[in-house]
Image (tube, rainbow, N blue to C red; front, side, top):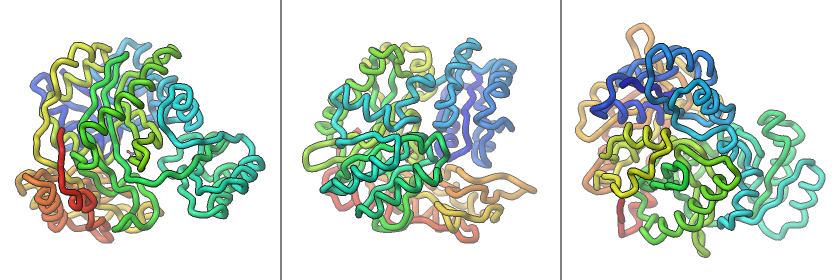
Amino acid sequence: MNVLVIGKGGREHALVWKLKQSPRVTQVFCAPGNAGTALDGVNVPIEANDVDGLIRFAKKERIVLTVVGPEDPLSHGIVDHFRKAALTIFGPTKAAAQLEASKAFAKKLMRDADVPTAEFRVFDHPEPARTFIETREYPVVVKADGLAAGKGVMVCATKQEALAAVERIMVREEFGRAAGRQVVIEKRLDGEELSVLALVSGRTIIPLAPAQDHKRALDNDEGPNTGGMGAYSPAPLATPALLDEIESHALVPTVHALKRRRTPFRGVLYAGVIVTNQGPRILEYNCRFGDPETQPVLMRLKTDLFELLLATAEDRLSELVDKPLEWDPRPAVCVVMASQGYPGSYPKGKLITGLEEAALLPNVKVFHAGTKFEGGHTMTDGGRVLGVTALGETLAEAKRHAYDAVAKIHFAGACYRRDIADKALKKSVVSGP
Ligand code: GLY
């Protein structure tokens, strides 16, 4: 059976790599892919937003399952178009993908469904937003309503920062006119963050192993926010009791609320959680696999990913609820190697060496993100370049293996954090899955 993965990041490379391991899968195509997906699958030169081109390709190659990686095509309704063309696709419809595409929609749905989340207000003019900020006695987070490539959320330490965020989003429209039409202003919460991803179809929810991301560019959670500089799974913070609470108080009411609105969710629901002194609170929902969380999570998944994603896309995930997912008990750590300057502007076209040596290390997989193959060489082609991922008997060993592999890889200006997984290593108990 032929499968198509849409996207070109580290998450998509991990999906291609894992789907290719299914005995039922013949070929995994990736559109447009990167240098790594070309090694584990077959790249197709079609961009992720070229829906007509992707539909034509899926029909021609008799693709049995298309898996959408990034949020953009989902928010534009790629799933609706594929379904109309009688093609099977993994991901939510445009209506359900509002949960990620509109922060105001997500917050209102959470409030209506009694999902624990920070108190908030939505504004469609800058003046009342400014007045609200001036009269708050607590620090706030200002969020552009629409998709802003992960840059539209500003965690503010002072009123001045919050006012500046409103200026950037609504007045200067730095994230685009549509994204800045509304802002969500919410109370800033303190705690540790956790990524809980679950497969969802209809009312069936199958959580995946929890992971923790590292959003800041620099060690000790300093520097600007990025798409994610590293991740590990499992997360010691995510005890079984905490995961049960997140499922019953957040995932279940959210999925039921979407179904009641006649926009049922099918795909992967990603809850960005903050664990506060008062318990877990949902910071945001995403409607796709996390990047880089997917890399360590799929490194540990033993169950056939193709079966899981096909069952989700065909709305028969309920058939699988009695079969628990199988996980490698060993922890996995992913270290992102990025271009100099990321998340700001950065150069491209730097030669990457050492990939073959890194690949020879046991229990290591180097997932490509911003890379391309040109003139017989692998070159940098994006901000996040590689997700060097490793398993170990312990989290400390997984970290060591990942950094051993990182040490073999070189490109001019390579940047990476040295402290991935350190927060978890300071905690004593590691609990499954
Ligand atoms: N790792 C953050 C995200 O995927 O949005």
